[in-house]
Length: 336
Image (cartoon, rainbow, N blue to C red):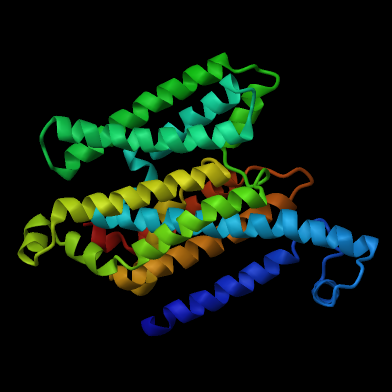
């Protein structure tokens, strides 16, 4: 059964992506209308006013948003799986080393000090996300202790520091214009996703996702402990640093696209591990596709269930909490 997991997830991902193309308030975009639109574009026929609206909706709104949801969902799920394997802790998530807290502070700088500039917000969010993880790594190196526990403590200190700085940025923000935008961004949303951003962020994100999915064998060995990994000829420090760096970059890029979207990196690895087992060679790609499917469906609910679009981060939390509780109850014996 497990050997069919990846093909089945691939089909489900494609099917979900196609369904999301026709989900939204613009009901004129149907499969038949899409066929006519593609036919007109291929044959270089003039577009009708309705087809022009369909083309704009498809090219500048739905397709970039769908691709962004796939990238962010896959990135957070893969990052969470890697962190849980490396730290040998099922409660570890992509934000454990402070990447999300650093990105929040960077977004605050872009919104408050650069007059709500989207480009400045994305750039500073990415830079400070990397700085937060760098601070955690520097803390562990400064103590000259290679223990993973010290690295986790460094991440907690980094997250606390940048969370405090983010609170300070909220205090400085204009309560009428900047503070609502900062709060909305911190809750996560694909409402401001642009095709250009998806293009320049999507290429490195896709590369990093594929690289981590191919590191399943290394992650399996590292999860056995340092002594076993060294006996098998794996340079533990270098291998762990590469995976942590790639997972951190993925988390930072996901923040650039959608803001703070929580729980995916914690819950999805648990669900997939329950279905396919702990082998990272299957677990990593399966987590990537499951995370993409989960975020696609959640974002579709967030933008269609009410008249006003609500942040997708709130829906991921509401949906993930009961799933996580059920997963923990199902696997309760393995926690004893």
